[in-house]
Image (tube, rainbow, N blue to C red; front, side, top):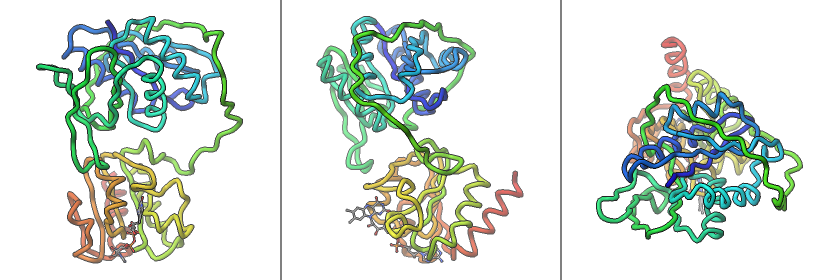
Length: 321
Ligand SMILES: Cc1cc2nc3c(=O)[nH]c(=O)nc-3n(C[C@H](O)[C@H](O)[C@H](O)COP(=O)(O)OP(=O)(O)OC[C@H]3O[C@@H](n4cnc5c(N)ncnc54)[C@H](O)[C@@H]3O)c2cc1C
């Protein structure tokens, strides 16, 4: 029996969330018995990059090295996956929780009749049944779900496992692009979000709210983000007013982030904003109002004027580097 892991990447670089998914699969394999962990990479990747998935517990990587697959087409990817589930006799499919994962996972479940759980936050408990813990209500609560016998698909949330690394290498098996694929969608172009670090993947996010008064004050946010190697985010009203692009809007109706550190500057901490950040490891709020709701959610808080605190913080970070 094997565990299949769906690899998500961009321009030949494997996303950190997929590395976590490989590690999650390998740790799960140890819990449920000696399972082979097979990562599946579709599109153009260097062999060395794929071999290094062995560092995180993949025993083998199945690679369909065809540039037609570089654009992550949902329909084609799920067709290939559903086929590989059969040919590898997989009993478990692991992928990272993302819009890509949700789309592919749902389609594979539809094609194979698998049970599927998204938003998984911990390794399974198999002491009696196969049980997984998932976050619900935008991370405000948790549910334990018992999964039936047969093929299972788990979509694992970022930061659900602490990844350890070895020097092991994975064996690469190249397979050709199947002939009978249906390329329904054709991606004719793509534009990247601005910024050195992308919000989705960021380890650190520096986010600004209406407390910053206007777009002309965003240099301060960008300077701090640059010093920390962070991505920039913002609250909804900030993007609604056109101070920042919409792809930076964090929250229930925007991007949901799970960085190691989220710094909220001049953001009140409305429940809709917190819904997008409450999977972050450490939350820091900087707000002039000591009663701002964000302080109730934050691990650390600085009560002060952002225009005074942020430049000092940036200088301090620079001096420590
Ligand atoms: C259906 C729905 C969905 C929504 N989805 C989202 C969402 O996805 N994301 C989101 O962000 N919002 C969302 N909202 C809006 C949300 O309810 C809040 O209105 C919004 O988050 C407030 O943004 P803010 O904190 O930037 O602004 P404000 O509420 O105006 O807060 C500004 C904060 O800045 C502080 N401040 C002022 N001056 C300074 C200073 N000099 N230094 C430091 N601090 C200062 C103030 O004390 C205040 O706390 C949604 C609302 C609805 C109804």
